[in-house]
Length: 199
Image (cartoon, rainbow, N blue to C red; front, side, top):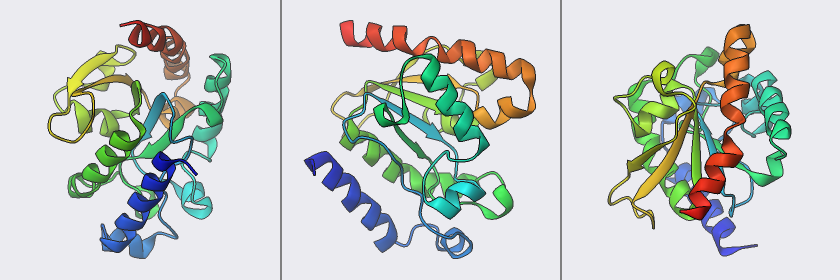
């Protein structure tokens, strides 16, 4: 086991020990911490686990997850190449949106995950995830456009993160037009990654 993986495992245990969001924990089956290699260059961040994720303890395993896998395949990546997680690590009852205070209390743990993994690119899926890092931006205005943001004093080696805001795959399942937009935005990932690596 790598040191990074060990640190991620310890962070997962700390969330349980700290009893983060006990009300949510009570209604959820289990903590859905995140999945993927600890040395991933890309981290995808959604908002919160859904029913299927809650049952299996893995992020993005329902219909939206299947669509995500298809899009990864289009850019010649697989789930084994990326790390994927959510802001909130417990399923909110009836898949409601996470409350602001739930996101706030989970945010330090998410930033710690990023600090351990040290990704080159953070892909936010949906507005909740985007607004954790860039609260003033609207997803419909900035989707598919990489943004550099400062995450100061959070222990990240690099003070700036490159964020790529994308629509949430779940939204695209119900809206055909958005589906193509998401596929087009997704197709930009390899070039963005290449640019970051060369800079």
